[in-house]
Length: 264
Image 1: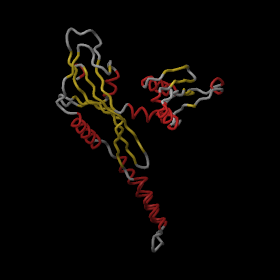
Image 2: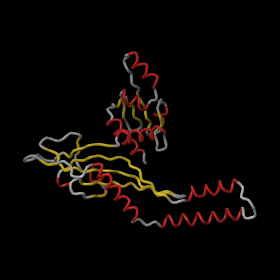
Image 3: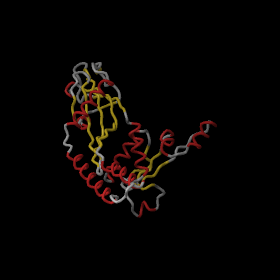
Image 4: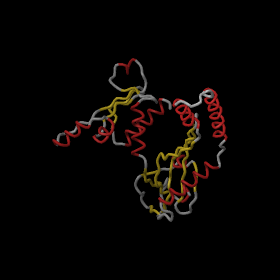
């Protein structure tokens, strides 16, 4: 993740959560937190407990995040923000928690002649992790039309081209889904299982071969032992954890999207 991408994420994150920017330039950002975001990010439970108990006037903190180190920012009291920074990963976790589910409506790009029907879609972004002694992550974005049952991939990219709003636009109405969201999640889960089953799993066979080779070396090392010591079994278990192929699927976020018919 490049610095300009980090900056864009941070700006969008704080703007979406109602914070204001006291200063914003190419080198650093100073953000005035809301009370809610101060509680979430700044780890001041005793302060907020005191304010709430006494009815005092809250004073949320300001947070300075340094995007680019130079002579100017060296003099600032702020936090360096780069891909491995703990603060950035805290913001990632917060964004994932707060944005785990959304409901959005497509806004017509031109005036309507009459009322327009918005079709319900269930969107879900997932990470498929292929793991052994190596790891590969694949992000998959799926959309399920809750009327016809049609499933499309690259749904997130499709949504980026739409004008979306959290409120139903004027002269628009929503169509009730024939497929309930809970059932839709099951359909997407089955789609993902079928997708994984159709993958090339040569990587898993290669991992098992490497596992077998290292296990053979381990057995050769202890071949003269009549009774294997405990360390043998510890190393053997470690090899299994290292090489055993596994596939995990984790949900990043999802939502309901009510879209104009052309989107279906």
